[in-house]
Image (tube, rainbow, N blue to C red; front, side, top):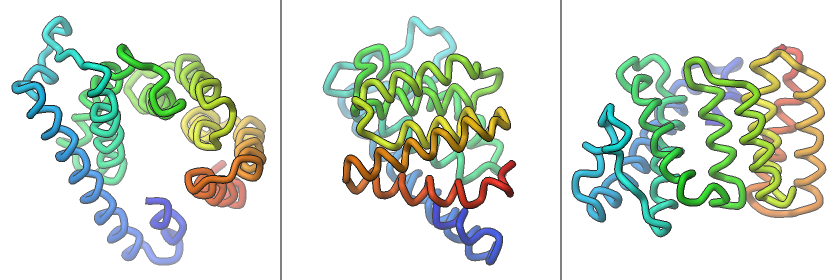
Length: 205
């Protein structure tokens, strides 16, 4: 998805192909996670779609990772397929999966779940910027300020959508600092994205 963004202005056809490929990967990941949850809890998918919240499925601690990946992959799939209204309409299911996981273990993934909650809060209709910021701040705290991801996510989901360039740049510079102080593959990926976002700030704002 990130690679598609980088080449979008140069080769829109190739960028579209990359997004389509990324969408298929997200879709496959979502199906695998949901299949695993369904095997562990027959009727899980049906219960998840109920309008009555008392009928939602309940997760065990061991199922939190599956629910997280099911939610994250569905959100990623939707982001790659914004021209598919039927798929976009499934965003509430991604939110519901994340919320179910949150109820059991909000600290999951050293802030990964909290960061996802922030991104989903920003993406949902009528989402609260204040609430999204709180989620991202929790993600930063849960990661002991050793992960660059929550800073990048907060910059994109909160600062960019609010057209707050000073906050946007401040968060990304903090992400770059953390990526240098705490070396990891994930932080390296976030470093590249933070650098690209900063380099393209004029176009984004």
